[in-house]
Image (cartoon, rainbow over the protein chains, first blue to last red):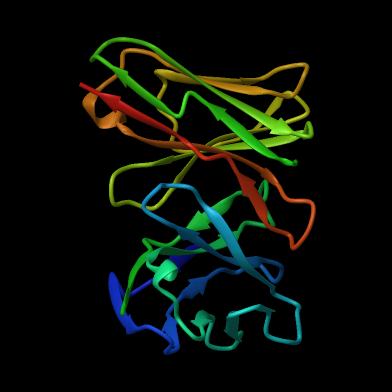
Length: 115
Length: 112
């Protein structure tokens, strides 16, 4: 069965520093997609970054980058130059390419950016 | 602008009442997913539709039903509400770029 594991319930980072949020996954499918979403206290789910299983390069989107290590089945999110507005819950998710392409979610990491 | 509109944003119901949550993808989309996110929890897949037909079913109670209509909006109907149904309910459609999914702002249901 497919599974996403986020082992950090909460993280703290100083403003302007970088932070890495961990995500490991488990799947037997050769084709899958990995996502990171941000959920602020308002509750909306905001797409941050995507990594396909066949992508050769790590994905980057502005201050967000994904450290994709396929052999280790990890897809860590790196946020550079943290801002106060980055304080939120962060969810790692995997697209089930073999079955309806629904998302399978991790438990999330709560990030607090300190001034 | 493209997006997903969910209504209502907030809903308070009493136990054993019924609730109907609505989802309007803009522009229309042939695929829609519903997720339930309990307080402090990760989202859980409930049900999905493709071309107005149910395409997959997750951990959706028998008290819940859903439908995708001819205009591609979708509704989640919940009956005999229980306290444990209190959650944030999202609908989502596949995004047009970045392989992502576009989520609505969610409906926060509180059962009292």
